[in-house]
Image (tube, rainbow, N blue to C red):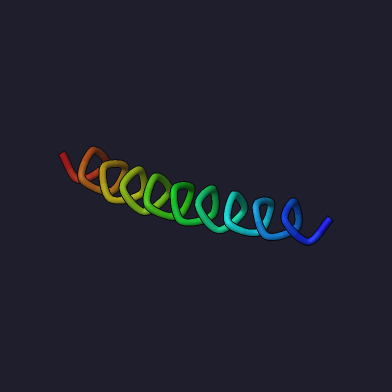
Length: 36
């Protein structure tokens, strides 16, 4: 049970960091697109 909890925690952290990088990169590209 503890093993799965740790695995789920790392999966959530990885997914969160990935979503954060994607959202920041998307917003940057969105702002650049709007300026043009």
